[in-house]
Length: 179
Image 1 (cartoon, rainbow, N blue to C red):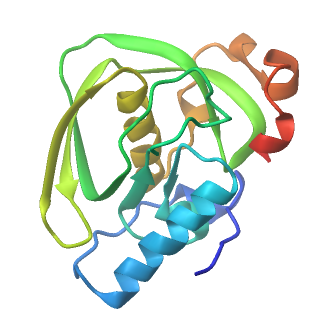
Image 2: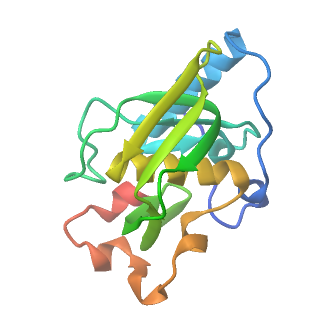
């Protein structure tokens, strides 16, 4: 297994639209998922999208069975590998909450997201996934899927007085965990 370097904001590869995955249950796909999980866990990520490690595919992973030190008071999100996702908002309601990103280290911003969503796609075996999510779960899915269309969370921040360094905004969170 390999822990990959996570691309940082400014790298043009983070701005492209990712390609659909067309082959499932392959050794290469399973290895990519395993490497992504190891990479995400090594930096206490809540999720990781393939484009963040320079892989131009519509594949995101998110969730964990353990509390995340970067988001200690957030509910658990089920560990998921989601390929070729489609997100459908379930109503016009939005919630704003603080987000960070492994590709935008050391910063947090207040980001609006749909409150409730349905997300569909497939797992690494090509089996369908169809879930309804709300709250932090919905936020994580939307954040990760934004990476598949070349969007980073600062592009969604509406009020830049609510954007800044994690160590200033949230002194109780170890800033090194955002690097």
